[in-house]
Length: 321
Image (cartoon, rainbow, N blue to C red; front, side, top):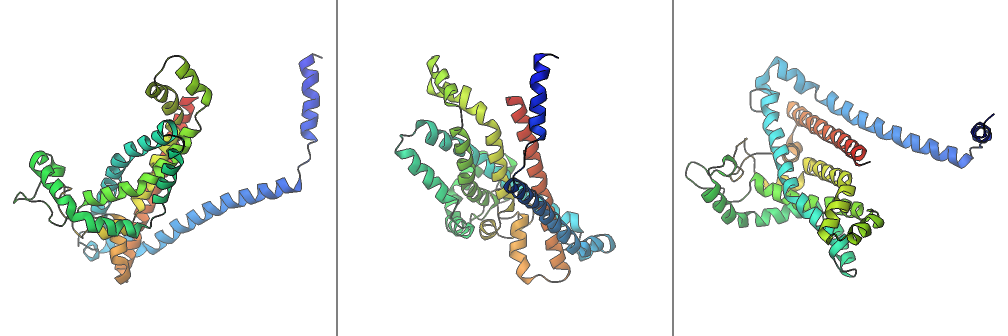
């Protein structure tokens, strides 16, 4: 018998003879129960939404003219999906660079006494209710009109910045672009906080090794910090995307009702969450079923986004190792 075999035999016997403490059993059971409960709640929500959407599904096949808009469910929900995705994507494009920059500044560049204060301030932004952001966006929406006029004047050849037939833009500023900017401020603290925590986990030895080899601070960040935190950045961005997709009150207060239009400088466009918030209090019968149906669509979109995020993070983590 070799030495390795002789050493492995007692190890296996010790492993088989390990006594599992009652506390470990209880903790394992509670953790498993919590995971199963989450899945059960998720399945229950999906089943409830589907069950309440059956009237809309039947009406869309039997008599599409009874659906809002008179053309069926898909023509009704498609502009809402587009508006939801556009507002979420614009908010991510605006918020992500600022979030990464703030996280890098607070973790690697700010003075030690200033960094915690900035971190607490960013975290406090996440505690502000969405209705406050909505009021703020509604109050300042008209202030964006000069900026939108500038866009229309110099970038009007781009469809998303095109004015109307008279060469004017929205006079109220209650456009999808305004709602997207408000959303970007709302998701900024979420992305920043998560990215900051990821950057703080960067191995100190890697940073010191890069600096010792003559790298500048930016080169050290580019070679050591950013590659280490790429999976965390993706996770934070996807979490911010989920918040932007489901935001209701702020978007509903900024946007005015309207159909799907290409330009972001004109009043119109709507998101799924805002459509539900604006119409649910007075809805009944088939209209109630329609709103629940588009809620099911938003639920599906959010689920797909989260699953895609987990897949991206898993692939990024594997490549990083």
